[in-house]
Image (cartoon, rainbow, N blue to C red; front, side, top):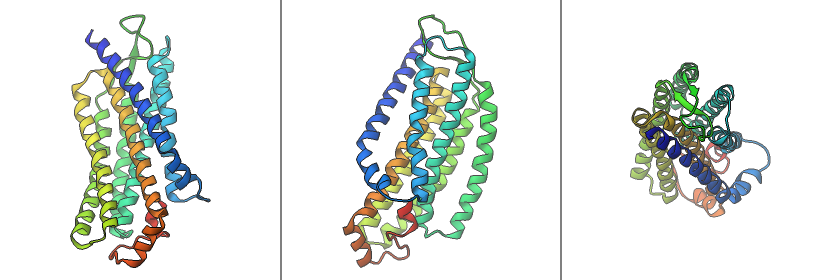
Length: 282
């Protein structure tokens, strides 16, 4: 009965997460049209935003199908698990890149910061490839305990998936530390309220992502197997939501004329945010 309760709770959570994403999408759609699609051409930020924003439109339906489809065969369940897992990793990775680019821009594209992120990227990619190759074959599906239970019923999964969350935490810890140090420096030496607001927002996003990854690492070992899929979907969808919000916020700031004037009038040394700056294109 406990496993049935866990399965029911996990499925309800997936539906609520889908509702949350749809609400967020339409809530921010006006900003997306104004700050993304109304701009001609493509930039680094736009190229990152589009897949980050729209990957959940693939992940969520596939997740709901795997949870509520009537009598899916094991091969279908395995294929769905593979697609959802890979797309989830891609969505989180794109989110991590977007936040890393923001931190890199805050450091005036310092070469030392670039070297740090290149090293992080090498470790990140190698670790995730190993985790995916080890975890996906370990996921097994079986017959549900009751015939009325729909969807794919996962019976086992390797605990090595926690290593992927640790990798995410590692990348997020680097970005959070760099952002935190830069924010601390600004608050001490830069009286500009706008810069303080932008760094404060950056810290909020980074700490939120790191906290989610840390919480999920513990949950992997504390909750039944049916919950592990819920955690993975939550991780990927929430990361994409935060990354999309961060990019829309930056472009909204960049779009306002009064902010441009404020940048022109006030000294923001040693970093200079202008409409043509790298930060505005993220």
